[in-house]
Length: 312
Image 1 (cartoon, rainbow, N blue to C red):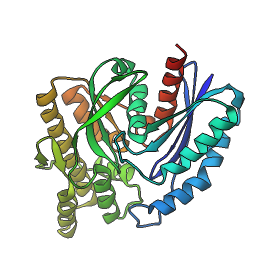
Image 2: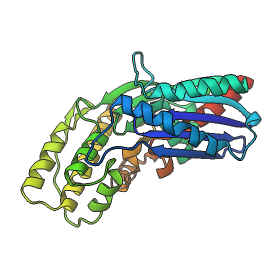
Image 3: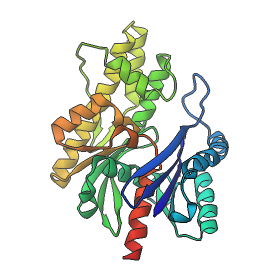
């Protein structure tokens, strides 16, 4: 038995299969961004997903009998709230509907954020979180927020309890990275530069309640750049600022909701500098790198759980 997951997010086309042995196979491809760019228009994202999804799907199912796919899942919106919408997700949704109709199997829909959290649970091997209340951070180029997650059938329901009031963490990283001449998306290159810096930095995050503000980070890094600071120094400062911001948000949420389990998901959370500090300070769960960035693995996982739950 297999379940198929599809995710067409703002920067990655992905498809994944989960089998009844608990194994996940995934294929994904970044959307092309022009050199020097810091993002994509939705019309361009839709076009590139349309071009890429078929080849990824063909590669993924090339060595299996598609008759063994018993359910299809897809992300249809960024977040599990009313009004959440982004055109790029329509590409995956339409493809999933066609595949499910052709195979005559159930189709399950989720949000991109739910997929990220589920992938983190799978990668961190903390399936027990499906049975208890926990706090999940989703930190990426499109989202910087924390949700209170509670069991809901085979999955969970999520309530936003903290977020950014302006720039997302991934946006800040990419803007600083492009300023330094790095390739978009800039997270990996920025981390490599930061790891070469041996000094210390002082940062003071901007927190309002449990929410954060990150727009000032770009300006601070620009001032450092104009004053002649090294790329390594600026990169390290950028990541430590985001790290301090997430730590301050976490401390506020713990004081409000108690010492609940903590889970961190999203592309930014694959950063080793930020991850090591938060793991050591809070004992939090993190997705493994292959399940941190945008992926369809979490969608395939949720689909498998829901298909199994429906049969039980």
